[in-house]
Image 1 (cartoon, rainbow, N blue to C red):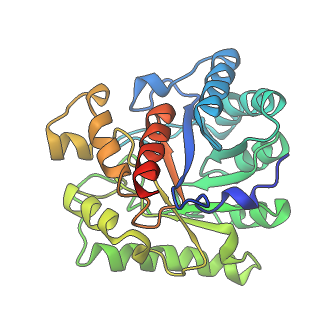
Image 2 (cartoon, rainbow, N blue to C red; image 1 turned 90 degrees about the horizontal axis):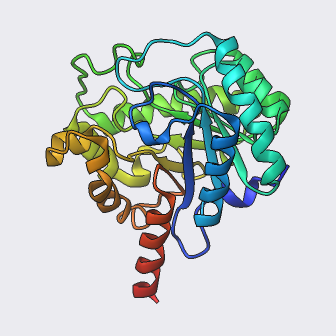
Length: 278
């Protein structure tokens, strides 16, 4: 298993690390990110690594708006064989397990995962125990409600302040149990219980959404429904240009990790930006 510490924060050139999305689900919102076999998922992970991904984020439960819960045992059966196969093929890649379930996180970490990506921001207190036991980093994401109801009329008085306070509450629980901020990544949860205006405010805020400068910042905007609202692009297949437009601002706003469906395109984007900066 690799040392995950060097890849928790942005690259030396200031550009974010790229995290490739790998969904072992039949119903994730972008169909091209779904894989139904260990072989295909592993091949995709190898391709993403070759294209410039330093993290692979593996999920066995869709958290798209309106999604229903998956049984934890079924979730584990989906992701564990994939994690084992990818770890065998890519011993130095960072592997993140995208789950809300402590039992799934534990099995994933046992199988070779390095980090927990918890979209529920440790709603289950047992997740804290897993993070402590395995001495791993964790990404805490802000979500209003649950995937099934989160887009039912979300309201905020001050979305940046309220999201920061939500992340602060979860970070405080982790801190109280000995998890330092250097091991915590904060994700504002774009599209998770937010309208377009909320998403844009959170993205514009950059690192101001974090309760501590010692924490890392992750963005997950890839092909999301905000591009339907913003650009009229109803199909996820039409949202790459909008995704790259937002991603082009990530470096200036202090993003450490950017979670994407399209690794090669983002790697090219950041390489081009860096060439102009030089």
